[in-house]
Image (cartoon, rainbow, N blue to C red):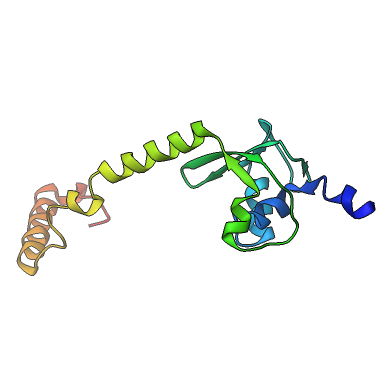
Length: 145
């Protein structure tokens, strides 16, 4: 009877670890302490117990997932078993899909760089221009040149 009662409630850090949102329990605790996990809309501490039916919001990177707790387990199983422990809300699924589409359509950051490192000739020209400017300024030249 005691074991059954214990599985009606489970620490949020254990549940997040068992549901495979974080690789270790200490990572889950750290993220909870940073305020990235809410239960029923309230920021919680790692020792907070979750119950079946609670709504958990987990922010991982830029993505916030809203989940309904379906089952409790203090054992970390395979991914298919972990997926049975929660159900993501339709709004959360739609929001994640919209973010993924937005990232897909965003331009590649490296393409904004029209040129890479300066060539040896360009570097010489830059140095020469700085020396000329320093000579023109005389005593008033900035010290970091």
